[in-house]
Each structure stands twice: as C-alpha cells, then as structure tokens.
Length: 180
Image (tube, rainbow, N blue to C red; front, side, top):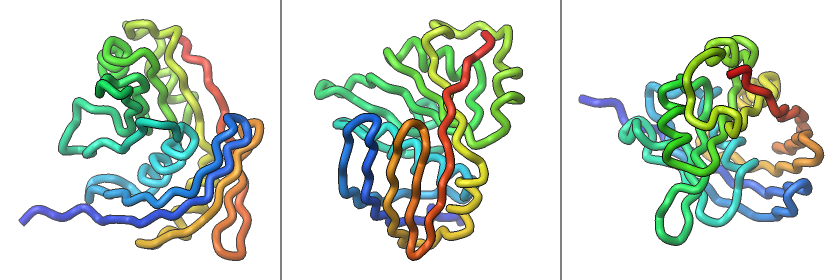
C-alpha cells in the first residue's frame, strides 16, 4: 500500500512590503512522504515570497515535469516556473524554454549548488533567478511545524520576519548569481 501525503493547513498573514502585497492566506499544502519537512517549509516560503494572481502549488511528485509552484496567466500558460531545492541543469533548461521567468529558491548550500550548474548548458541561463532562503529560519520553522500552523510573515528589503505564536523569527532571502 502506498503512503499517503500529509496535508498541512497553513494560515498566513502576509505583508510583503517590497512588492506591496498584503494578504490573508489559507493554504492546504500536501507533503509527499518522500519530501522533507525542510523542503516543505522552503516551498511554502517561496509561495509567499512569489504570491500573486495565478499562483498555485503543483501536484508534486505525481507531475515531475511541472514546477513546484507555477504562476499562470488567464489562458493557463505558465509565466513563472518556480522550483525549490537544487533542480538540475536539464530541468532548468526545459523550464527556461517553457516559461518567461524561472526562479529557484534553495534551502541547501547555495555555493555547492551553483558550482554544480557551472558550465552546464541552460537555455537563457542569464535570465534565471536564484535565491537562498536562510537555512536557520527554515530549520526554526520546521521545529515548529504542525498539521495546522498559523503565522504572520513580513518581508522588507529581503529580510523575513515571522511571528508564530509568541515567538518572532527572522531570516533573509538573498539573490544569487549563477556562474553559467
């Protein structure tokens, strides 16, 4: 019998001051048994950082040819392909041919990841966007992860401020430059 995905209910008050996005969000996020909690948290943070009309989580491992998160226009065309972790050069090459904008949020060692991509052939490599999410913030949120989680997140100048219960956590999101 196959293992079932775990569903997390995430309620967030989002104030992304850099982009003038202010929303109350109620997300239902499925976590596949093969997905780590760190990856799940990075995926939720990326969704919040990229939040706009047309954004949606993909169906996950059941659709491996799709991004972790996609922004689609009203016709259903992917305008932003958003991946999490360390997608390989082949995946990025395909993504860059599929969407105008390709973004990767990594919660792993960014230098090691970018070194892996160095010298690889990736369509429109210069247009790719890479961001490193503060690994300590991801770990702190994982430590507080429950099936129902409520928090607020404020983003200002790449600084993330997360209030969860009576605790306040901070971290950064840093834009990286790909050596390809």
